[in-house]
Image 1 (cartoon, rainbow, N blue to C red):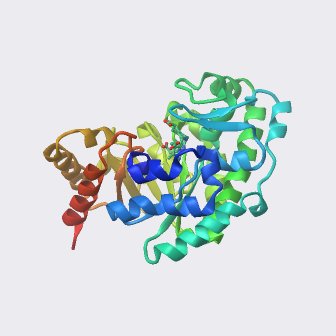
Image 2 (image 1 turned 90 degrees about the vertical axis):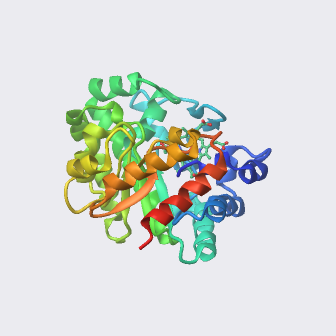
Length: 319
Ligand code: CP3
């Protein structure tokens, strides 16, 4: 349940007066924030508190996260010369990540920590557009108009992302999630040609560690098979595709993650339970299922609704 923290008063309290990106570089604060939803909701895993643009910031890209907007990039990447902003990343660029992951693993005990990174396409979208985008028009203009430059951009991002995931795994993360949040904007043939080789490179780079690799996107119903083919062990689905159908599209040998619509959490409890039952029913008989929301928690979600949801899923799935 990404960004679950935002709905918590204890999160808003510790973040007061500290900018989002600054907070990601403070290991003690990162540890506290990561633990908050685990403590309050009793979820089965923790997701590392950071953001997909942290590795880009760490190598010197001039960007910020604007409250209520998201990542904003000072000099968007549109030409070959702009690529100079992207150099390789090493553990020495993100010492605060190594430190925070180590502290967290010690504190969490048996609860697994999920590390994560942004996938090449979604990072490229922020870098090329200069900020959040509805239609990704500059990104697509570059992808179709200069496939060579596009491939080089995504290749550099794959190198950075692989290194960032390795840092988290080597410090003790027990699973990793690759967020390709906006890749649902592409049709399958374009995903296969322009994106899949680069995301596959990331999954390959961390395959040797043997930790589960989760692949996530929104609006990716038509891409589910390819998201699995890219190399993930677990494929996330949003609420638009029932999980049994998602599993058919992904094919055998992989687990499915999802897929309660986060907006459902604003409905009365009986409706939340009915919608949860539907998800669990569709997941019955799958090779593996990670219960999750289909996208992040909305900031004004009532945290007690989340706690009750976790309790209910635990009740329903107890053996
Ligand atoms: O649950 C967690 O807090 C885990 C950490 C986490 C954050 N961002 C913290 C965050 C994770 C896993 C992310 C991933 C992320 N960031 C994605 C991929 C996942 C997804 O939701 O699709 C994307 C696309 C981003 C980019 C980004 N950063 C967005 C869209 C926003 C929200 C902007 C807004 O305010 O509406 C951010 C900021 C951000 N990242 C916040 C948090 C807790 C909120 C900022 C704040 O609290 O000040």
